[in-house]
Length: 353
Image 1 (cartoon, rainbow, N blue to C red):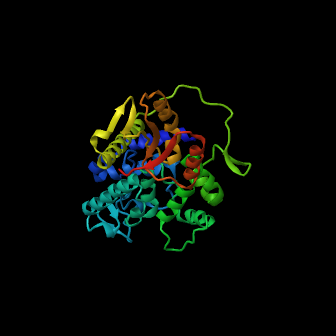
Image 2 (cartoon, rainbow, N blue to C red):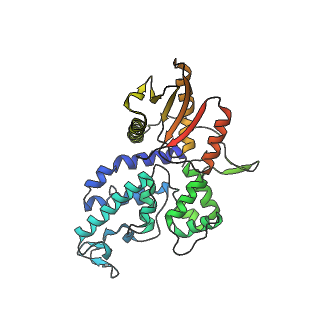
Image 3 (cartoon, one colour):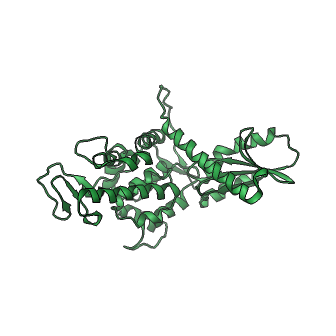
């Protein structure tokens, strides 16, 4: 399965389970028996291509409905239908309310990139980090088994122990992700190298595209042919991207107004996301909602240079590309390379939303 197909699955998931839908879901929406439209079925089964969490029983969801009501789980709390972790409450409704609140917290922390907070939540790691990955705007590498994450961390020379937090490892992987490799290819390369053979087959399935090393650089393999048959692209992802873009754009506008006054800030003039008019220069801001700084730059650079080219203002011009996240180490090298090529002052900035 290629990256486009995986992103299509992600679009479908986010279309079915946006935050508002999670906030309104009932216990039967969350987990069931032979129901293929519950939240937990989507997370574990329908999105398996985005990282597997097989290998532990259903208590990983915090609460589950037993397929055989007579088979009680003596290690946890039970009623006549459901089993749940005692840490979440004394009855099913109390337990589900606590679990749902944790799911909502995961979504909030994942969307904002505040991954350390996810470590503090009580849901089992395997499940909560899969949920976080789905809502992280492709910022989290979809590997969830702790032993594999520890093997990768040790290879990156992070000293690990039983107390090493999962968020520390994910932050490390974000820092070292190559600028031009998508998150799924990155995951496949890591899993091929550090996952056990048994786990590779069970969790990831066949790796469609192999990366090679050419001149000391990891290079994505080419393809023999492209699929030219008609296909339908989901619309939910574009809606989500638009909403995030609008939030970033408004946050940027408000920040510039606080710093320079409302009269100096103009939004959407000649399609420019935001322009800042200063006495001696005009700064062009282009906002992108991509997962990494280098992706934002790739998407925005030609566009914003076109805006500058056609602009008639005689003042000095400067361009700034704005994303949600700070650059990692590879992004920073890419930014310096772009700066070395341009004759116009260029910068990348990130802004929290």
